[in-house]
Image 1 (tube, rainbow, N blue to C red):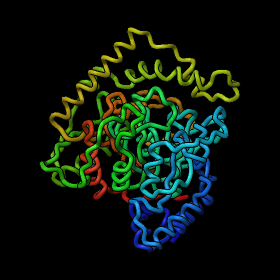
Image 2 (tube, helix red, strand yellow):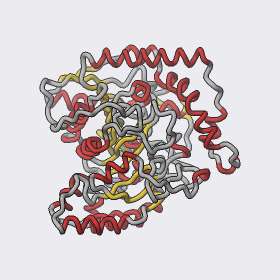
Image 3 (spheres, rainbow, N blue to C red):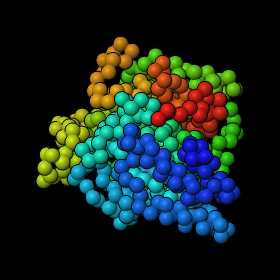
Image 4 (cartoon, helix red, strand yellow):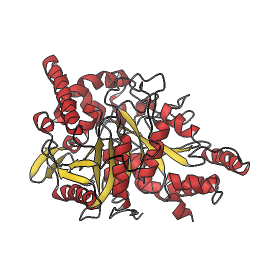
Amino acid sequence: MSTELVYQDATKLAELIRTKEVSPVEVMQAHLDRIAAVNFKVNAIVTIADGALKAAKVAEAAVLAGEELGTLHGVPFTAKDSIDTAGVLTQRGSPIFRGRVPDVDAVSVARLKKAGGILLAKTNLPEFSYWIESDNLLSGRSNNPWDLTRTPGGSSGGESAAIAAGMSPIGLGTDLAISVRGPAAQTGITSMKATHGRVPMTGIWPRAPRRFWHVGPMARSIRDIALAFSLLAGPDGRDAFASSTVQFDTGILRQPYRPLRVGWMVGPGFGPVDPEVAATVREAAETLKEIGVFVEQVGISALERDFALDVFNKLHVMEMKPAFAAATAGRSRDDIYKMATTMLSLPDTSIDDYIEAEQAAERLRDGFADYFSRYDALITHVLPIPAHKHGVEEFTIDGQTVDATYLQGATVPLNVTGLPGVSMRFGTSKEGLPINVQIVGKWQAESTILHVASLLEAVSPVRGLRPLL
């Protein structure tokens, strides 16, 4: 029973609790037992929330008393350790913030709690949420549940590994260029980076700059992502980017009013892609076509003119360095890991290059706007390769040698433009590793991409696969 509980999705757990088939205490204890059994191998969980079991007992009493229950009542959730949690350590993957305990929850955490969710634990990340692997001087390196010699990605790698390994049913990650969607791809779970500003970043470091940062749900089913998004989105009065009122489609997974038009591509404009990954994208596209969706291969010329990764690098180095400099000022070099050291050593972007990058970002937004005037969604790869071995900094992909930053080639365009995207598994590599596809929509079209994702999930050849730990 315990094994089955930890691999139920959050929606099912909420249903089982609501109908009194299981208690919140049973669910919480099952996840605590799972953490005790496997976390020493994976190192995804860095802190168990004080009072998690006590909160589950309170939730159980509410069920027995017949009280009105929230949509996540009694369901455990986890959060990346850059996201503030009241009374629970939030150390940002750095000795600089060792022992830091916030007084107030981040807005995203508070909204899941308001729906009845119970904070279970905090999850690992790279120093300052800043790299494609989850490793730091404070809590060490996280491993991929599918192959412990490989990374679960970054920066939300601990969160992705915890969910994939059955230690958490649902959680929160953050995404600057890859960090929710990439880790989901490396561990075979699902996640969503919503339109920029749909979910407030209040209570998440860094406070500034925020224009490329997102917080998003990570889970094992599309319906969980849809549910979490409905709870998380909307203005909070403090994050100016999250200023628009969100209109929710109550039939979020319902067939739209007209036939869908979907394009698919793996390049050019994203960098090199492994043939296995490209084949998975093509298979997802063909599967949609087989079930009656209009699908065709496409190209987006704006991505070919302006390589989004180069644009991003020129913009965010200039903007992020002050945050890193402020955090590390006066600190011993022993407290600073390689990510902060690398960032601080990068040369400043010249003002001419910065202005050109700003204009390139506008061209990319215009290019996507043109595309979405003709199509409802775009299917691409998430990562150009499956999960890689720890510590690799250079890759040969389809005959081309690139550095590790190129893993962000298909994800960073969505951060530069603010577009929403879902990462979901649809394939398996020859080595038995997950391969995800990315479903991209126009601004504020989360309902559409969740619908497309639900269609693919229903016929997925890899649905229900679990890592053996």
